[in-house]
Image (tube, one colour):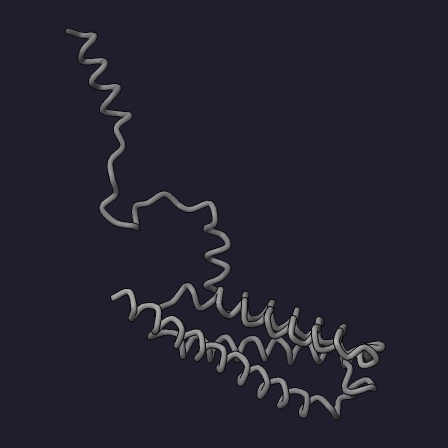
Length: 171
């Protein structure tokens, strides 16, 4: 009799219970990346800094001598920023996307402005075939804001359209 109770207790402990909601599921091993991808300041800020440094590398030196490599470098930058924006937006619902895209663009461009300032200060910010000066900062800032706003806004609109089509077909 005692042995049967011990066996029942051991099975009762081993038997898993199903959670009633997702809030009681154990944390994922990817929780750190998920938290990072939800942070507008961190993700957009790092993206802005990396994109500005990448731009400086692509535009410096003899990049214009080899046009296919130059175009490939610019396309790689656009693909990178669109991939990061997709990763960021995947954490939010459709209704929150317009505000999130605007915030992402704002933070990303502000980070690029800051990195551009650092690059101008050390004499490494390319503009055309020369290095930019402080007088070129405002035109560079305006061009960056316009380009990033058009690229990311347009991409987010295309992504939203694709998501809308996919979700409507399932329903």
